[in-house]
Amino acid sequence: MHTQASGQQADAARTAPCPQCKEIKAKRYAAVRHGDKCTAAAMATAMGLHQRASHA
Ligand SMILES: [Zn+2]
Image 1 (cartoon, rainbow, N blue to C red):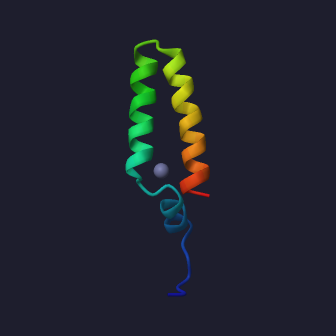
Image 2 (tube, rainbow, N blue to C red; image 1 turned 180 degrees about the vertical axis):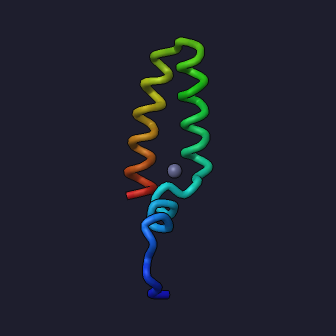
Image 3 (cartoon, rainbow, N blue to C red; image 1 turned 60 degrees about the vertical axis):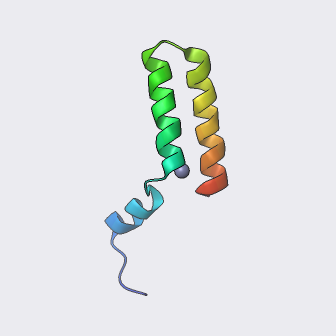
């Protein structure tokens, strides 16, 4: 498995759909829509922690 890597493939792998990412993004988006800055900030923090934990 050492084919010539295309930039697109590498990028897709890095931003692979992850259920938890989707959930956090959805919650943050909903919070922003409702003007819930507290939850939006918490979700932004959660996203950062999750990305460091699962996508480092
Ligand atoms: Zn994720």
